[in-house]
Image: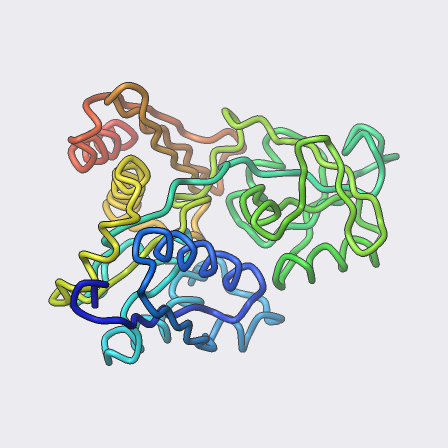
Length: 311
């Protein structure tokens, strides 16, 4: 429902601290444009929230675990706009729904968070790093031979507490999530519950992010023109184009967040560059490729990238 046709709109979100922070950013953006619009947030518990402490089979991936119930609420018209971390969404679109908009993309960097300055360089012997991402596990083993990687689950604060309570050397987290929770990492360290944690930005050329990383996606029903108009008023067109390219590549690849794939689209002066990195079990180094073309041809660029990596 748009501000012109209704005085109320319902946003659907997960209940984690980060999900609430992201939904608040959407609400603030909408309120700046539609001052008289009443915005309500409906918190929806997902299967991923219910199973957050359970190991996830890498072959099954985690896509949909944090989005399925929200999408069902959207299809049932219990909410008007679903708010997602774009990287959690399956690459195949859900029938009857569409990703119609996105807020401006946050930083896409992955961060190495450690209890002591110097990161892995300061560790004695074989470093231990925790991450729940299969992609990050492969990237770490590629760039830091001999490293020991362990699994990590839970929301951002839980992961930080696990680091502080363990003998691990570091964990890896997305910069966007930390900054949206109010942690300033630009200075190389930040305070968390009274403990000073060190931050190292992992080289972006080698640690390509997951498709959709740093993007807050706005999903609506395909037949809801009013909701589409509301989303249009806050949509960041370049971010949405980049997201479409990344998701289309993953759809063609049939990859998801459980696959060891990094893919990133960027736009400079109407030209889009899309890069990909794919890890395979039998080799340490990834296969990689990149394509460049007009940003408006995002879907065709994704097709070219898929053909290039499989050529």
